[in-house]
Image 1 (tube, rainbow, N blue to C red):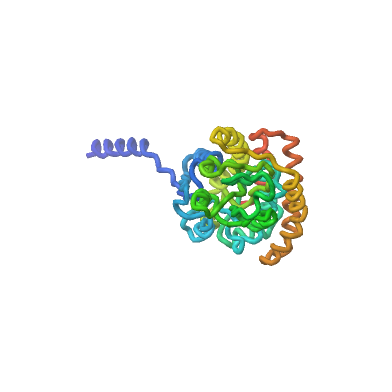
Image 2 (image 1 turned 45 degrees about the vertical axis):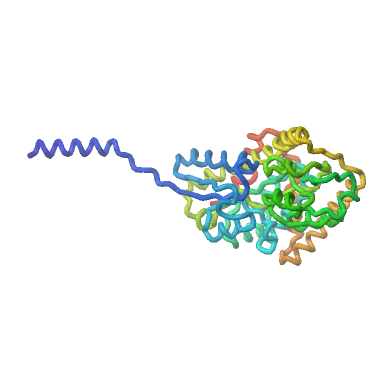
Length: 370
């Protein structure tokens, strides 16, 4: 009897020695209305997800759902708030009535001349210097951790646009009030829609032109429709949220998981900015081979754009007040100061991705309390 009991205990100990408790997994769903090949996913979210999973030892699993599989661009914020997804790519200016403060951040895009500078600047301004920005995100059930910025937008059209008279009367995709006002300033007709819908709109004749990133020629296959690109810089998209989580979901993450996210986010944001520059350079070469014409700007258009930018601060403060933003001047001041700060940092550090990601962590993310 004792021998049998002893043998049974030995076997039990041996089995317990082989058994290891399973790692508790935190499963997170992330929705993106753009495809896997889009710059934001290719350089940003896919490596970010892999790196966070490694940093947490596999305890956090993030599932990326691209191409609007869960929600459209306009519906992403409400989908995160309502728990249909745990995080996602939110473009605040798609719903300015919901995000009037953060839309104002995006409305300053004509001040952006370098996506690396602007990505760091708008992220810092939002996280550290704009309390009402964060309050607005949290009011909508979202914990914000970073924006992204495109290179300067261009005017991309189906037909030739060599001067201002050619632009007059063209229907052009121009998301947000600033780009809409710019379209009107050029005597075009602004049409607001997510960039993912632009191809079909061009095909159906609902659009003649798009104000946007020339990288979209490839990522959205716009070069099938667009044959002329005006090289005058026309602002940029900056702002919104690319790394964010439902506030309740964020609260449930372990300290190790939160630290992994905060450590990996700066590198992801910088990668996206560099990725946009790289993609635009590659796309320009490919687009020319496909017969797309890159048209130099003309002095008349440049002068009009410069005048528009100079008047932007006052006009956007007035627009923001009508949307209910309190003290919009403070928001504008925060972004302009951050832009100047990061211009100096980039000049000092140079275009070294690792060094810039480290600096962004030190200057911003290391100061976040969780």
